[in-house]
Length: 250
Image 1 (tube, rainbow, N blue to C red):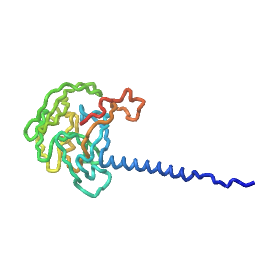
Image 2 (spheres, rainbow, N blue to C red; image 1 turned 60 degrees about the vertical axis):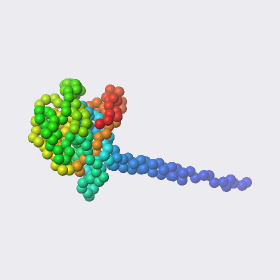
Image 3 (tube, helix red, strand yellow; image 1 turned 180 degrees about the vertical axis):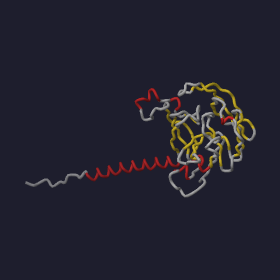
Image 4 (cartoon, rainbow, N blue to C red; image 1 turned 90 degrees about the vertical axis):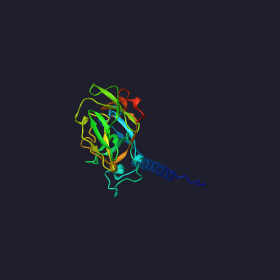
């Protein structure tokens, strides 16, 4: 009796190839995510109320890295990139909401609005912002209810000389409502929070922000949960998610 000499197909090679292909896909996806995060868009979360009413605690937003070009801080402040200044520099305009590295400690990210450009003279008098001796147009809009404190706060719409308009909060007369004149040096910017009486900005410890410290321009909110809620706690989204804020432009 003859034996069946036909060989059974060896499936181990196909399984190894499939596993390796899967690993390559994962590695490529991770590499793409790293490149996008480093050079294109980076997500940031809002930890404080300094930019209310336009940004709320629990907002998650995308910041455009390429809007202002690249510096050692915008790529990764933990690495010594070996260069100073910016590559493919794009300059902020008045009214941009910008993320930057806190000048006294570049490990910390700040987000504020650009109100002063190099060479500008900035001053606040009786809560009014002055740019080069001219008061910025400001109109009372209504009231904003702070969900955390339950306090209703007056909203004022400011319109900068270039036509950019945005809302600000002004709770009371504070130290930042009357300042000396700040003359912005070359290569620096003057930043202010929209929540004028609750913002550490260029009127205080932040000071003038070097162009090198700019990380990028905030573009839009892509996700938002109420103050204190964890974004991954999806079982609580029904009560914590703020879908009306999704894709809110800045």
